[in-house]
Length: 171
Picture 1 (cartoon, rainbow, N blue to C red):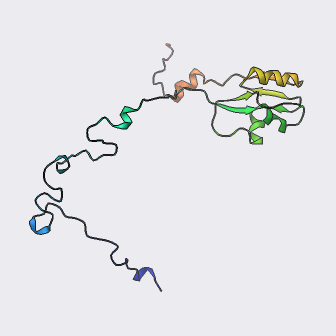
Picture 2 (picture 1 turned 45 degrees about the vertical axis):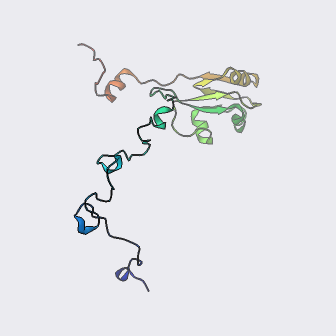
């Protein structure tokens, strides 16, 4: 039976570290296993990933594209068809959508889009919606309320950034 106190590594599963440049007797003296001359024989040779021998590398030849603004507004998207899960006369807001699992994760607001059909009269309260969605909700006899996005108050911003870049009122 093998226990921790009598474990042994398998035969041939390891080999000694090469000690290069330690004299002719070591077998790796003089050129230290690098051969003679040339770029690869020098210290600091370009062995990094993506190096193409001095040719302009692929990651630099390909064009850059795309940009994600750090100040972008991210909306959780809900379609009209998803609202069929609610009972007639219900109020559909952010909390109700979260409870049903229709909205998850981090976002700034909820946006209603016009995919699918709506047959029930609902009271919808969202931050943004398409014209198609608005028309469909009102056609079904429901009402739509567009909520403003919550913006931080100047006092809250000043507190959050500890006054960095925020002009203080003169007293």
